[in-house]
Image 1 (tube, rainbow, N blue to C red):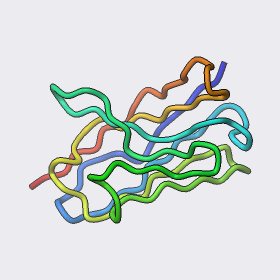
Image 2: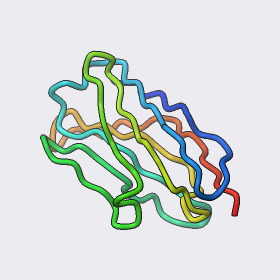
Image 3: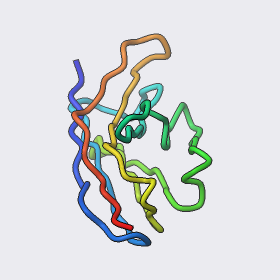
Length: 116
């Protein structure tokens, strides 16, 4: 069992920045995948940025604005968000897979609201 706790969300003006954090209750050093998803009202949950193996993946909509990075010593994954847009408004969730076909662990989510 792995618990994930997100933090760092809030209200920010368009063009602003936020940094989200996801702290895991277990080591993330050798896990298969960890990253960020988001869900806006009335929309499906979508990938934002992930580490899979040694690869970083980003949604096209956030490339060049968001950066995912991690601190294995702190079991923490971060999402640095710059140049935020109104359409980035969503609940942001942390997701972790220990192995490729393992169950997925999700955090409780953190709300990001970007005012236009």
